[in-house]
Picture (cartoon, rainbow, N blue to C red):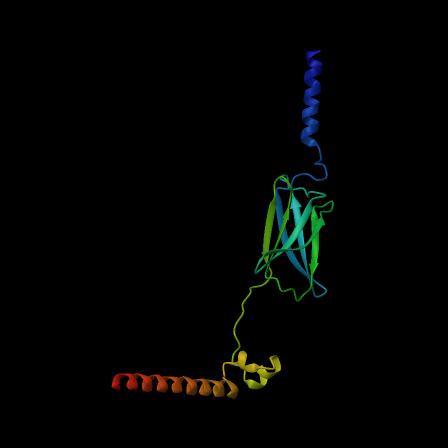
Length: 176
């Protein structure tokens, strides 16, 4: 009887060691790659477990970094090889994208799509460019329009008149 129990426990241990992981096994590693297809950008996530086998049925969430945090681009479930993908347009405005998978143990990977380098214009835009952007280009133009200069001259004249009247009142008061 004792020998039978030992043989059964040994068989159970061997079966457990050689068992194929069930669908939905816990991921331990996530690899995120990018590839160009037909002018679009495909993000390919590969989810594996500790032994290196792909995890089937894992939910992968793709996110893009924006100025206000992470924006969810979509989600996909991994296939039998542990791969999930999402397609982005070629003119995607995102510079950094991440993928994450797992529930109890979350694994995450990030990839930089392009360096986000923004330079200012080479030359300052003139009135012809600014007039197309706004019906009142003086509000966005570095050059003051004639109307603003005219209002500044009128207001300056009014304040100069007030200053002259105050100085006259001060002189009258001193003399009396």
